[in-house]
Image 1 (cartoon, rainbow, N blue to C red):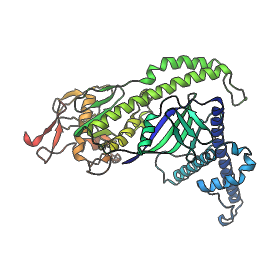
Image 2 (image 1 turned 90 degrees about the horizontal axis):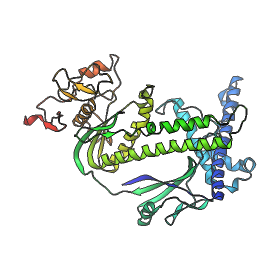
Image 3 (image 1 turned 60 degrees about the horizontal axis):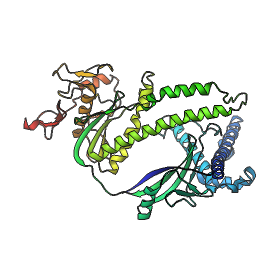
Image 4 (image 1 turned 135 degrees about the horizontal axis):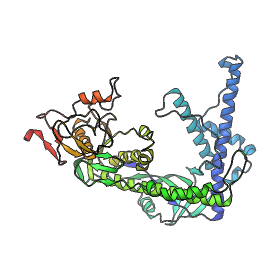
Length: 460
């Protein structure tokens, strides 16, 4: 199976190489702004002509937003726009134009309604001060040199802080091929990320028949339906909040940049801001590492994983929980589970957004009309079941497997209709009237019991 992997390495460039890296990033930004200025001027000209009553057929011809057209126009004007263009790789200018073409396409499709997700605004000019420095190479000399160096176009041989032996061994074995390289400045350190096409061996989970429901939360990051010990929420941002507050006060007490007056930041402000950025970068790295370890373990052990389709954008609107929800990284956990289960031969089942996993009794299937967030223990008035709220939700998620549509891909929609939109009557009435498990005695009917095991109703 061929997949695309990313290999990230921290670079240790010389002062000359760092100047070249900044020059390449600036060249990408220049090409982006140049192309955007031409597009905006063309759109403004056509809009002005329309205001004069000129028919559409007689308007100034529109500019093409494709990467090919933008690059062809750049090659004709680069000598006047940037006489020093030969100092940088051609890939730096192509990178900026490619990003502009993608941004314009996203805006156009979002405006027409053919692009999913939130509305995308018109591209803005990229600022040297605000925009992160980044450049992408797709052609030229892109390779590894030994175990401690990489080679990039024009930049040459650059030392790395860590060994590249893992990727080098794959390349030597013929199971990996580098497609592109992206260099980015993160928290004062240059990072190169190789996009590599890897030939992965076909694998299967260690327990291919095992099914587990995973309930994600803020108090406990992950609770499982099979009795496995839950995973505590590391709360990396909360742990670093005291240090961040101290560093933020230090930054605010120094002379920072002022765009209105043109004031430049002082050297001490730059140092204090860099210290604060390093803490933010460390928090992000710790969170990324913890999530990768969690998802790799789950995808490598269970044949079927069931998670919820959480509405993260709506959840973070709660000002009391927004920081904790963002710190947990629910969306990233689901994203990684989606591709890791596919790579490992497993299956990911996503419960619908309106499935009442917390309100439903895992013993009898009764649904509560309301369940306050402060109620951490689920008590069923129908059968008397008393169970931890998160464990009950995980058991309900695991019970959805028998309702899924077989062979519909890694993220399988369940067959109960819970992924539909809420009807006008509201979510509570719909969920209360929906049977959450098959009737006892049906073929292959399994339901979760209090101890987390699976019981076949036909044998009872």
